[in-house]
Length: 322
Ligand code: SF4
Image 1 (cartoon, rainbow, N blue to C red):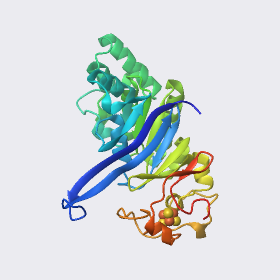
Image 2 (image 1 turned 30 degrees about the horizontal axis):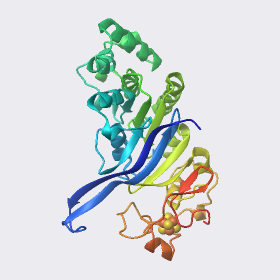
Image 3 (image 1 turned 120 degrees about the horizontal axis):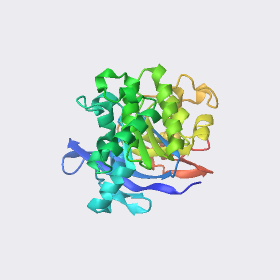
Image 4 (image 1 turned 135 degrees about the vertical axis):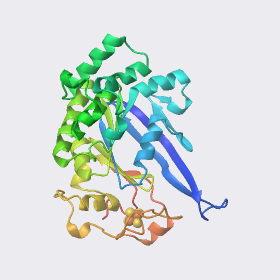
């Protein structure tokens, strides 16, 4: 196993909303709830879960665009929330985002070349000619041509716009790319092209990916390991092949049961199909209202994420027995 690049420790982000769930009259939402997670150098960690489970909040916390309520994120051993201004600037070069909707993330008044080179201008890197050269080189790397350099975003297709977004993310030569639903706004026919491009760029540039998606087919194609998130917590973490061959957590089974092309490993009768994503429970397991395996202990005691076999972690009292 390679070295740890990102080490997330007891990370928590709580939002308060109007209501009567706490002493102060505010309802507390734990968008990210005591998450411990490591991302290793050059791996692709898939982060999967339903909409609203905390995936995007966790991503923003890792980029330091948002501050946590408590907990830490260490990048190459250093706590990013204790960075000096200069260190934070360097970190922002090292960690880049690829967004879901390439159109809204690209400035419509700038040419492709100018969009790709913009981070170099912001970070005062290179002269005009060097920046132009790097932008053109990256356009080629992502499957665009120099002839398209002066075109504007509306002159490109959705897939081509995502290629521009990827080139812009790469221009500062980052170590970590956080791709948040990078293909979910694209036609299915284009999705595979972009995923394959991201895969080949990973090897060319020695990148590490945190790949965020609700789509298990996409995650399967991309990830080395998969972290399954439910109501702000990681409920299962394992190598990709283990998750797909034999999901341990009932929530992972539920997610996989909704994937049309999912075939091996899970018998239909083993797939719980109760309800929709709910609220946190004050006591016990957060998944208990949807879980067909629920036992008495599940309502009493919160299951902790524990290693149930080599490299497989699961937070379920019955893990390994169902
Ligand atoms: Fe279901 Fe209990 Fe496991 Fe929670 S701890 S997922 S309720 S079996």
